[in-house]
Image (cartoon, rainbow, N blue to C red; front, side, top):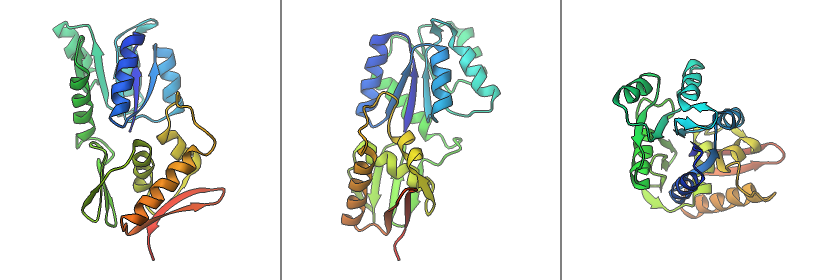
Amino acid sequence: MRVLVVEDNRKLAALLTNRLSEHGYAVDVADDIDAASAMLRLAAYDLIVLDLTLPDGDGRALLRSLRRRGEGVPVLVATARNDLLQRVDTLDEGADDYLIKPFSPEELLARVRALLRRPRLALDTVLTYGNVTLDTARMAVTINGTPVEMPRREVSVLTVLLRRQGQLVPRQTLEGAVFSLNDEVTPNALEAAVSRLRRRLDQQGASVALTAMRGLGYILAERA
């Protein structure tokens, strides 16, 4: 799961990044509307945490722009503005939740999980292929009914492959889902994550196999 935090307070942005990363999310940070807009053109996000008071304007301008384009990415507004009418207006303009500063990082995490669980989202949160099941909201994987612990990067790879089960997934698509813009990525980082996931699927008796298509990408398909 990839999250964009739009927050100009560096200390708070770092705190949110650390807490979200600890819970398995890939996090990018933008400190104003222009930077956030540029990142949204580069990557697809599962959720946006949005401050309203930003150096180059009101964060609601970004929210309105997203909704005018028909983008349904969940937006959690996190702001010091606690005026009732402004809260109502912001929710009416398309925000999915509204959190008033100061807040506990644990409450923000709980609200993030709740938004990602909402059944109205276009993407299913529980993915199944063969005997492999992934609950993307809880980052929980089971193989043949048995829980399997997986690091964040492996879960991110598995998420993309399960959403495109039986289809070839280009390398760049996986890289975009697994790594944030600030990650220091070595040339073989993706291959290492894929290799570990493949080995884990084999060891746990998964009924699906992960195959590399040289020069093209990767495919998750049912075993013969």
